[in-house]
Image (tube, rainbow, N blue to C red):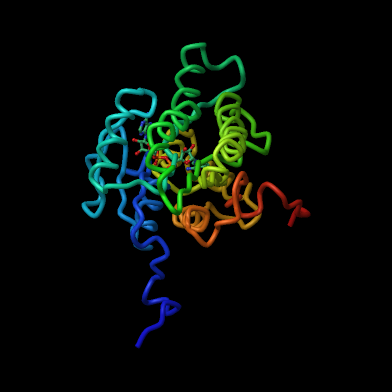
Length: 259
Ligand code: NAD
């Protein structure tokens, strides 16, 4: 007989729990949805474009920058499952350039999706999280929250705010039994980065430069980020709140000598 520790039988640490993953139709979000599902959770994906969402998940069309759309989708997911225990705020968009590169409307748009979106989605889920025995929220921040990256002023401001918001939310809700943490991925191999590389003058050289920037010499995989999220939202992390896990090949903390 197989034990729970047999790698062929994934541990069902989220059995009986229900999760919402925003931006779960692509990249890191899709990997998170798959991981949580494999761990036994029922999963709802909220996405601007849920057309290609895996049929194992409940898919809802939602724009995290629109409160009415978020409220309706979160309510629909909670009613489908009869509960909500886990919220993964992963939907996000990029922005390039220094502080002169984006106008006020673009600053407002990026902050509304990357930062306020987390407040909208989690607020809508709070009534259900408060009655969960294992409530957990995980926000997707970025290496850009903690390292100064060139030509990423607006994006970095938004992800720094995600880390600050994560800590504030953790403080506000710890006594309600709701844990709040974040992951900070380094450059991850997703359709987003594929689009960035496609728009570079020399995509091969650009990819090599991104790989060389990470001490482990390659891009992060979406599944590596998802594994960290699974840990943070699982009951196994019951004493972990108000912090973040870096999944960046060592980029934020290591100082290597040139080869
Ligand atoms: P992706 O573009 O592959 O996927 C993002 C998903 O979010 C898409 O399905 C998109 O439709 C959805 N989305 C975008 N705006 C939305 C909105 N307003 N409402 C609802 N859904 C919306 O991107 P990814 O690389 O998987 O990135 C996911 C998250 O990870 C983002 O928050 C991003 O900032 C963060 N991140 C990515 C990297 C990386 O290198 N890929 C590194 C660090 C952090």
